[in-house]
Amino acid sequence: MAKRRITFHPLTPERWPDLLKLFGERGACGGCWCMAWRRKRSDFVKGKGASNKRAFTNIVKRDEQPGVLAYYDGEPIGWCSVAPREVFVALGRSRVLAPVDDTPVWSISCLVVAKPFRRQGVSVQLIDAACKFAASQGATFVEAYPVIPYTDSMPAAFAWTGILTAYKKAGFKEVARRSDARPILRRFV
Image (cartoon, rainbow, N blue to C red; front, side, top):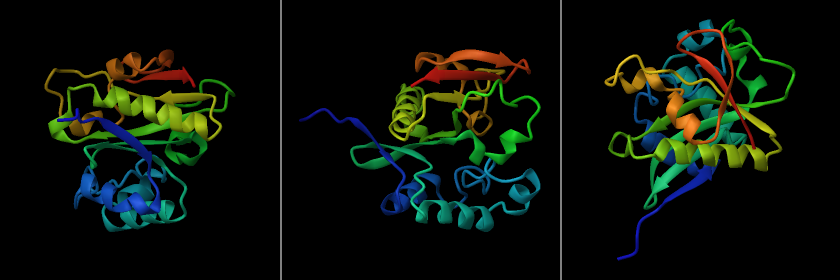
């Protein structure tokens, strides 16, 4: 039997059903639909659920390709949101994640790996695929804002931006830290 492998594809309108399958009814995490950093905080909170889903659906329908899906034997198992930093309006309002300098960057804002595939290196591969996608769209640098787990059993919902060790394995370097638990990392792509 041939060895199964993970493949990666940008999220296009044709692949929307795959994202729905991966995210489930709740939109990955409590009605987020990957809009937490794409909207002002008040709009995001008001939009939890159906409104955030509609907003993200529209982004996908316009074929903005807001990230990369991971597949294992044709089944969606992971998601990584990556886009130019300026589309993530909440980042612009963050004191901790404010721009480090004037370098144009793309940002990874969300990372989801299906539970059966966690702790197997999928996130590292997905981060790498997101960087390659960003480079294909003209990016020179990709930034990330991972968390540093406070315990080995930290709930996955708290690690939606990914964890520091995965990004380091994917070649990211720390460029700033304004909070003990939230470094800013960068990778030249």
